[in-house]
Amino acid sequence: MILPELIPKEPGIYLVGGTVRDILMGKQPTDYDVAVQSPCEPLAQRIAQNAGSRVIPVGKPNLRVYRVVSGELSFDVAPLEGGSIQKDLKRRDFTVNALAWDLCRNRLIDIFDGRQDIQERRIRMVLPENFLSDPLRLLRAFRFGAALQFLIEPATKTEIRKHTDKIAGVAGERIRDELMKMLACDKCDSYLQEMDSVGLLTKIFPELEPLKSCQQNKHHDFDGFKHTMAAFSCAEKILAGPDALFKEPAELREHIKPEPARLKLCLLLHDIGKPACRTQDEEGNIHFYRHEALGADIARAVSQRLKLSNNHRTYTDFIIRNHLKPLHLFNAHQNQQLTRRAIIRFLIKSHPLTVDLLIHAIADARGKKTFQSPTAFEQFCRQLVHVYAFDFQRKSKSPPLITGHDLINELRLTPSSLFSELLSRVEEERLAGGLQNRAEALEWIKKFIGSNNLS
Image (cartoon, rainbow, N blue to C red; front, side, top):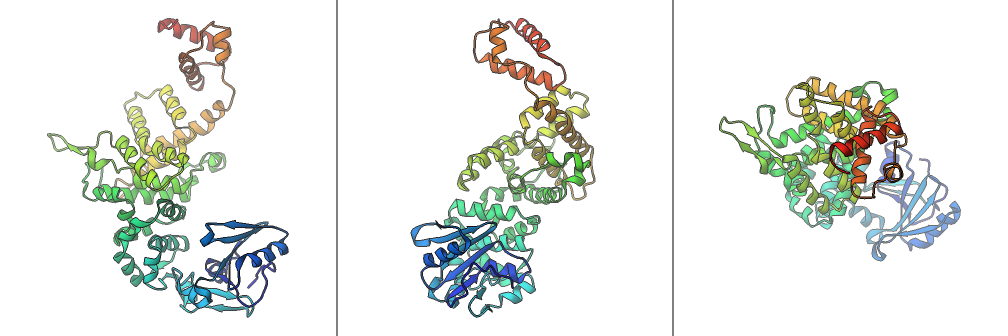
């Protein structure tokens, strides 16, 4: 085992938790969790001195950790819980994390057979009561399962099932952090299904429960919940290899950079407005008019509960509120009613989240049927990505044809709220290919003002 020479090899100093797990799995960590019997700060100061760095106190006074950063390496020094390494490990969440390396004796301490669980790729609780001491561990079981691609041991799932209601007492930001780490994993769809099987998923997202009894129309093989999970799985497959979906990888790769965790959260919540919007006409046809708007409103409350950042809330609201827009464009295209200006308006509104929205739309469409082969809708979305990457992006980066100063100096207009509309209209015309230079833009505004009696 290769260990940094910055950490003193003395009695009572241990590497613990995920650091040891990763080393046993053949990974060389960059983050080192150090536990010590004696006071933490003096050890952290010694590590910092060895590294030519400094100590950064992290956390509340009663939960303080001392961090030292040296290049790509980070060291967190914390006290042993309970005063001994055995008591410390006993209080940990899962056996694969209840591991320590005695730096003085250069040996593994593994009192719960965590090494064997690593070898057998298994998430197993240390003690049942540890879920009660911190109910966030109910969710962490599935997060670690997804991150490591380990199976969750049956007795552990049984214990989680007993205590799912306890997750309600966990702070929203703690749930958010664990959830987003889980969603960032490449393959977490099966772990979400397991979370649902033990009743934890709908304790975190009660908004999903009504989808289970929400029967859908002829375009769907599944109820609302099964469709959501199918669409989520489809999104994971797309995000794992977007090049295969959009072809031309060398040219498009820089434009296909969605943040997987955020997009997958949107897939999970995108249809939560359906149950309240469900109607059935006289012929028995089922409709969900404006479910995307209501769903976005409901998701706003979820975002607040999880303490998402303002940027993340805006992203979630936009994707859910607009997730049907690509389908509406496609329907207009099928009816030969889609204009280039309509496409440009869509790209202006969706930029810079255009690709995210189109991936969401394709996953949503794929999740409607048991067997789904590539469709004309997917091909349409590919074409939109192509227009966005090679036409819209290039043109949008060039300077505007005119500014507010031109409206004042050339057209003698008085500054007003009309300015932003005029400039937006000119930009839309430019991106649509209708205007090529400043003179054409000024002439276009004169005609627009005259035809709309805006002078």
